[in-house]
Length: 162
Image: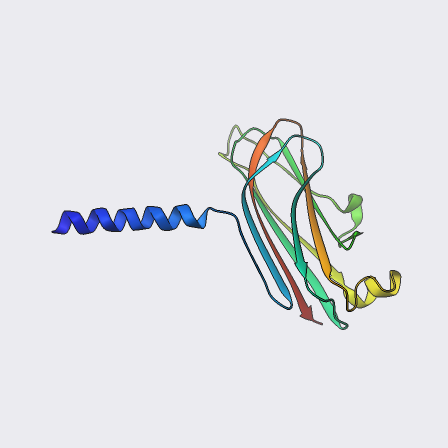
């Protein structure tokens, strides 16, 4: 009886691990989450994810976190940037692109966590009618140094009170 329980437990664990790797998304009135397990980047800028928060509100800050994990171990650099309703999120230096170096000779994959944000009151002042009481469409783009590579991406967007 014991070997049967071990095999069933192992099979259930494998099933749960397999299901956890599939693409998924969740959203609510002030949050949006997305996970994608097989995004292919080819060296040029590629749209990798889009999430939407139903309605921007005053006195709020939008926070966006993007994690990318290379699954192929071939790149030397990775860049990620994000926009909301077509406007670049902070930080806006260096063209809004956050970049990291990757060394596939010493590490099995490149993992990068990038943070972006926007004060929705300031963004609304700069772009009237674009953020308050409007859907917040967050687009995430990425680029690599050239070789084709496969990534897993996770995006978390939250609108929080200041």
